[in-house]
Length: 295
Image (cartoon, rainbow, N blue to C red; front, side, top):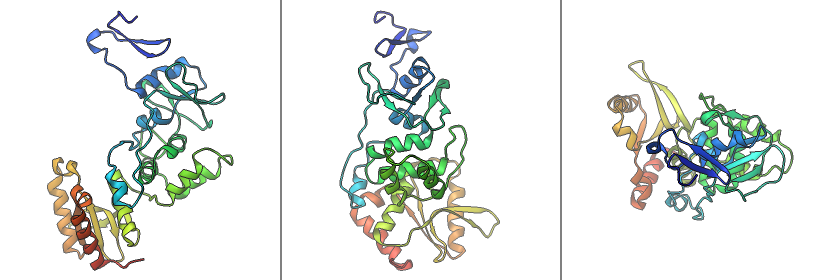
């Protein structure tokens, strides 16, 4: 089969055929896992790192500088880029065939890429928590809180609901201790990993935890959502990544930002270098110190 330009090996003994050799690209591990799942039987599920990618979890191995920013040990996430699947029963870590088989928890699964069965967001999160050090584990929990346990629609969860899921699991379930540690620092309504980083930073500074994506009615009758808000003090932070400037609605966003100032809010935009450059991190601290108490 190696000689056939339309064929691509997805694991030992498993091949996929493309209708056109020009389209026969090499598959990523999550794509291989999605193709393998139905071949491995009804008890198999795409899981672990492969499921995390399909869910859209923030799993980038970069941004090591954030650990230093938050006073954490600098550790890289462990990522095994083979296809990962789990079985409802059986031994774990069977790797002889070029893919990794794990023992699953048997939680309700969802249908994902190409009709493959994928472990739930909660089960996937539990599997990945021990591999995501520090802020990375919190960002993954924040993601599940923001998007929920449905792959095809946004259905947010609360910290209390996620804690209930953990309480219902058998004692000693792998990943539970790491997930509970992350949950202590997680927050509802956190819509991006950089919002997670900024929230963890202001708490690391010693300021009160903010309300995430807080809705405010503006003088013109429209509604603004402040990334990090302290409503009692009318103080807010907005993280502006590159996407903000390229967004067609950026001018309207700036109009809402100005209206918040007119309504008595103390607002500050935070950019990537405000978090990476020590002098600008200190400037952010000094600005917050003017308006917020220390806890």
